[in-house]
Structure formats: structure tokens, C-alpha cells
Length: 312
Image 1 (cartoon, one colour):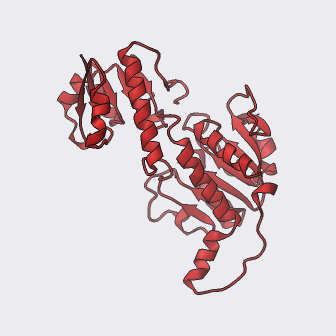
Image 2 (spheres, rainbow, N blue to C red):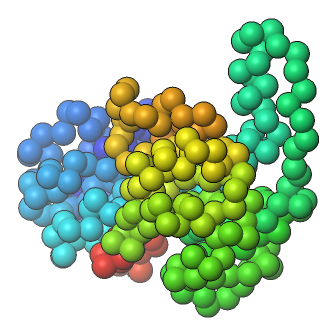
């Protein structure tokens, strides 16, 4: 029997879906209740345990994360198969990104501010997506989902990925990271959905942010480390951007004394575009768990195996 430790929250009525899988002895535990004995017995863990705890799982052969991000786990024992939940988050997070873009494009947040003062005031002309040039930096599940939505609404969409091997029909052009300096001035909306790697940490420093078009919109839902906070604050205070929408920040939770909180046209959400806030995301994560567990039991190739060198 394969000892499986299931640590992602799951309702009682869903447990039978996993208990029905043959040759598995499944223990369901809240993350806060995991014991050293649970870890020592587990051959498979479904869900995100603290990285330090992985060292206590002496018999662990496979760790399935419930997150798309895997960079913090890339240095666990090399003999452990590491898989993530890539593919579960694109739908929900890309809708959040679309909402952010429209909020800024149509001045909706500014009108909400006026409402507090009962101020009936026309803030002037706005742009439309049909004349907007959009750049999706990161073309994984999330970035691609966002690009598809923007294309469907009439925007001119380009993408950035590590290597260009094809150009999907919903993208007008595809670029590589080393072309960012050249292309950034062209775009009205720049959306980041990057994983955290050596290549992406502080990718958007003062130089790159300054190259963006004046009055553009910046969205970040990937990792807060992709943007140098101090540089962003300087440029945002100077009125560089029409709006900056951050669902992720370099330090989380964002400290109460951070300058970001008080910069005009910077809109902050507490890393909530993903997680399990959307039911569809949770369903997709459970589907990935179940399908991969069946693969493991049957000695079949696993889905979503993380490349340790890349971190995703």
C-alpha cells in the first residue's frame, strides 16, 4: 500500500473520490496538525507542506503542490518527484487581470473615490481595449489565458516567454526576455505573470519601468520579486502610470508602513487573484491531484513535473 498524506483542505464528501483509488492508504490532515510521524510514514504528500518539513519525510517519493508556483521547493531532495498545480489558476487569475485593466482603463477606481465625497464629476476621456496594445510577460497558463481574453475583446496582444517556439493565433507577436527594453515603449498595458527565477527577480527595475509608455497600465500577479519596489514607487509618484495593479508584492503581507499603500493610482490586493477563492480553481486542483495520483499508482508519467533548474 502507498501511504498518502493529504494536507490540502478537502470537504468530507470529496474524500471518497481519493479513497476509492486502489493501493492507497490516505490520511487526511490539516496542515497545522501534521506530526513528524505523519511525515515519516508518507510516500506521497498532496498539498503544500512547509519546506523545512520535507526533510522529515524520509520515505517521501512524490510531493504534489496545490500551487502553481514551486520555486521555494526546488531545493528539496533530488530523489523526490515534485509536481505543481499549473493549469488550475489561469481562468480565475486572468479574469482578475482583466478586471484590473478595465478598472484603470475606465477610471472606475477614481469614480469610486469621488463617490465618497458625493462628487458628480466627469473625469474625461478613456481608452478602449480595441485600440490598446497589450503585452503579456510570461505565457504560461495564466499569461496565455489573459492574452486570449484580451484578444477576444479586440486588443492587440503580444507575449514574452523564455524562448519563442510558436506564435498562438490569439497573439500578434511573440518576444523573448532580452527584447523587453526594445519593445516596452510600445504597450499600453503590461501584465506580469512570471514565476520567481534568477532571471525574473528584479527584472522590472527603474530602467525597464521607465521604458514603459507614459500613462500605461502595469499589472503583476506572478511574483512580487519581479519588480523593484523602490523604483516602482519613484516612477508611480512621478505620474508615470495610469494605474499599477499589484496582487503580489516583494514582501507579503505588505507592511503597513510601505509607501506603496499611499501612492496614487497604485491598487493593491492581498495575493487573492488565485488561491482557492474561485471554486473552479479548487476543482481543477483536485482534478490534478486525482489524475496524478492514479498516474503514480500505475507507474505512469506524471503531469506537471517541475524542472528544478527553472523552478517551475
